[in-house]
Image (cartoon, rainbow, N blue to C red):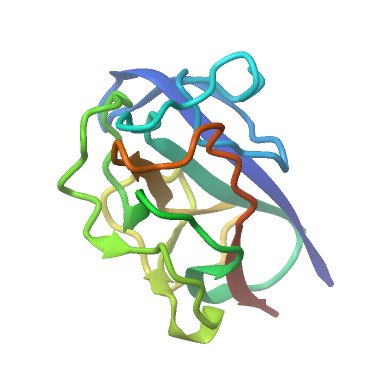
Length: 176
């Protein structure tokens, strides 16, 4: 048995009930915090500048393939260092809002410092999409989704020019 894991991302105006992004697409492995709300544009074309925040990123995982249950989800910043004036904020949520560059006070977890994924935020699962309001600790439907893993890079005017960062955010889970 082996689940197939795919990163997805919601972008654009909030639509539907429950709300999700106008665009739902595969997320790239290079999921940059940038000055545009999309999954495909290059950070070099839409860089952040000191004193400005990125658009929030609403990523999530989809599991398909052959599995019985997906459980024990954890999410954390596990590698990489952020410089002066840079703060990574995040939250695990089932709520989608239209991404913006204003400081999102709902992102309550400071993810600036790398930690062990075992100390990360709990991620729940659901069979109908990340925006579904009743996720659980396990999922046995195919496909199965995580909640949204929402993050935003927040900057101050003391941030270095260029804002080039390499960080690893890890999603850990068990499958049977």
